[in-house]
Length: 241
Image (cartoon, rainbow, N blue to C red; front, side, top):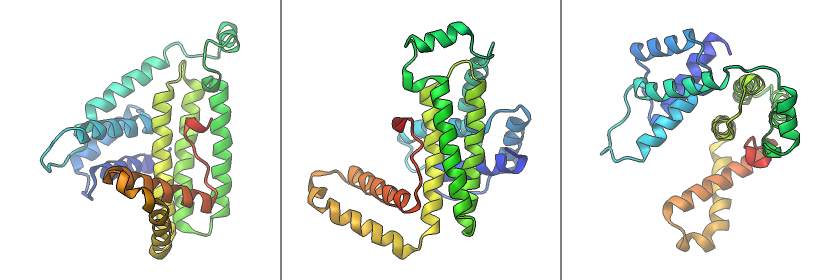
């Protein structure tokens, strides 16, 4: 992950979660600079931003917006401390650790080797998709971004003493959101409306029994599924492991 991408990814995630565009202030850039200088991994910062806004969204704020990246600072620091502690004493798996996995003390689907293989398989799929859509600038840039993120996550999984499936799932969910945004940008407004109309048609019989929020979420999931099918994009969630 190079210097430029680190700052861009953080800025774009903050703006996305804030819900409206706002230039990141020079003070915020100074904070990002300090995170970079301390080698805080990108996915730790992004997870901290996500957690901070998740908590913010659950409280009533009377229309007030988060105006500074410093709102996320404490959560980023807390997650980085957890990240650092998870790597204390990290080394190659010992015979005892391998035995524990073999004896079933770890859920089979969440062993380090299984997760590593799963992520590398998906990295290969995304690399192939990037090559397949190299002629479409927006898609190529999207896949290049998520490939860099996934490569860093794989490196962290390989060096971690212990893996948190919950944190890993949060990281993979953010990657899926970046991909979905890229897919939406790559199709015309007319194509997107056609998919939404198809979803509305299929959900018509159930709309009266669904709350508005649930309905919109379900429709959004339908659109996402159709776009993934159209472009052959795999799901990254550990649910599919």
